[in-house]
Length: 251
Image (cartoon, rainbow, N blue to C red; front, side):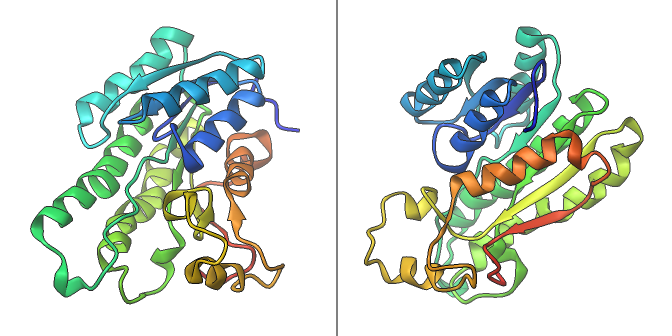
């Protein structure tokens, strides 16, 4: 089992879904966690409570990742509160905006790219400069970036820039022993649209049938498993990689 005792972590977008599962997992492994949220203070409080119930420490910090100054202040909080910064998980993002490219408005574009592209870029940038030597940076991407799919133009194009940046940043800061990797989940039960979708939802059925491993969707814990790997000692010689978490589905 991975032991993160003594480590300090920041997880963006940790009030629900994948971010919440990842933050709780890191806390259960012994890390002290800064739980970031933009909205959803109640969800962030629940994340903190779950980490504390597991015997670790956590605090909730509101910050808008589309504002670089707030990202920097968020990361500073880990060092000021816990004395170090070992792990940063760039998870915050929007998964709305599905529809034809021809229908996308400028306002929709700006909203999506401000969070998914700009927010992720500067989270990775600030983390790269502030994380302690030997630390880990993990970006939560999307399997939609692996192939063009009608209706996903806006969302997917907003997720692509940070996916590419992972490899570049791994090259630029690797000399400090910092690993930079991406976890790339497919549509995940308990996250985004699939937080509330019903069992007979046709899209849910489509995703379930895509995996050769069995008729189920991936879960937020499946994604947390991959993050656990990238933040533990078993992955110290792995950097600049994209790990698809899809149950064997191609995307």
